[in-house]
Image (cartoon, rainbow, N blue to C red; front, side, top):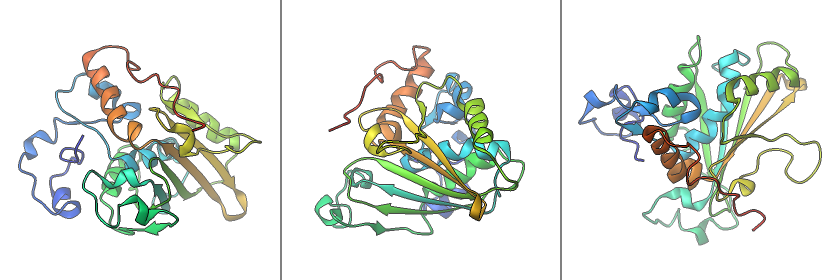
Amino acid sequence: MSADFRLKNPEDYDKWYGWKHTNPQLLKEAAYGLPELHREEIKGARLVACPGCMATATILPLAPAIKAGFVEENHIVADVKIGSSGGGSKPTIASHHPERFGGVRPYKVATHRHVAEVEQELNALSSEPVTVAFTPHAVNMVRGILSTVHTFTKTPLTSKDLWKALRSTYEGEPFIRFVKYQKGPYQLPDPKVTLGTNFCDVGFELDPRTNRLLLFGAIDNMVKGASGQGVQCLNIMMGIDEETALKSAGFHPM
């Protein structure tokens, strides 16, 4: 569940984490624990490194568009909002929920370590180098993440193009839901709806005026962004039903 084996290049740990990897020989062996992209590797793995929560919420909505070659690979901006439970188990003044309450606070605006995972995974899907500008914000939630990713298309796209890419990438995935409704309060992914579940809700919107494709990913950072993803990977490694212990309807509308 830690970050110790998420990155394949040992030099990236010096760059993003500030320490030298003590077991670099295990990096090639470790599978990146995002089942939607690495299920077959996870099945035969002895060591699985579950992704960071914000990396999960950013990679999953972006992967289909990158894989299809729809967007400019060097012109991607991820704006991520995360609840106070994403601050880890060691409280600080900045992560303490009463200090976060009522505010929206950008932090690690250009150097957050999860961007290393995002670029690593997207580059594996692309024939061109992918770079992502990534900025998280601490917001007035206890749990949940919403990633809003701004991309710019190479050619004009239609909604049909996006639906085709999403379905071809995630057909049959038990924990991916497509969210794009015409009416109601939850027309696009909202972390409130994912609370207590292992789902990642993915959605999109086209902005033809600016040649922009907006991609959205919403998860519960305590489940799909942490323990739930770990259980999902363990189920795959053990060869049992992937959804075992994860078939929760969630907490909404609490």
